[in-house]
Image (cartoon, rainbow, N blue to C red; front, side):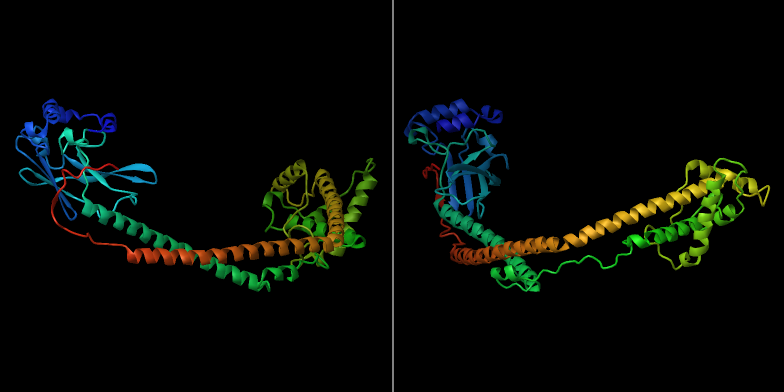
Length: 426
């Protein structure tokens, strides 16, 4: 047995009891001096895709051979400079001392040279000798008829897989080309050089966006927006009952504390609010869409003011007609003035940003056009590369189909042959 076999295959415990030492002694002697002969009491016979293993009754391992499925057949061959070992399956007992193995139609890979066969009870276990040690290698043998057929069939399977894979890749590439041709055609591009002249639609700055208002009209726009938010404070669609309040009614009933330090300021705040309310109440009804924010927004109020409104509404359940407390009214007026200031600032910022955007639009359009034309050039170049690759794929597919059609698919012969003396090295 080869030295690498000894290092790679440890004898199986199940085989030790069968007389390994006795068999080894037989193999040391010349074949003429052993009762088992040069084939050490075995016969390996090939017939088409069947391989039969037979043994003499006095073979020391006969009891183990007798177990159907106990012995397995292995193939060894070289592929891409590497040794490949493949399990071909277990034998089936078809007679008293005869195991039959069915050889596969193809192997995992395409062998570079001969396919060697050997028998063993399992991977990394002792191979079964089929010839005497005096002949050199004792375990491997070759089934030449099946060997040439399986190599051709394995190559054919590879070609079939290549045809399938290339067909799939080619169809995908052709679909991508068709889709990309349509996309480029929509841009008026047929060739790569058309990209430099393609028309790129740009998005112009709106002439009159709703939230961009000239400085002279920003104050009146702020009044409309804040009156709408103030009237929403009594709208049952937008606010819960405990926080609801009619700000106009509360301000009309408001009487600043006489002699108070800020009486004059509060009176001015009330007049300002009432004037805006009278002017913008009708224009800010259901059909009004605020220039800023949503139609359901309300005045920004401090938490203490909201709590005071809630307490006042609770008090009115017992004492209807109680006017809103001064703290509530002054909080509402502060909220209204805060709304005017905040909205005016936001409108000013939006107008300034819009002016800058309009001024920079030509440069942004130029940069955008350059970018889209560059993207078009890249797409067109990739399209040309893909079309060239499709040509290569078609040639590869045609070659694979030709190989597939020429590959042999049936064994050259089914003659039964004894293979013990057909020594083999992968």
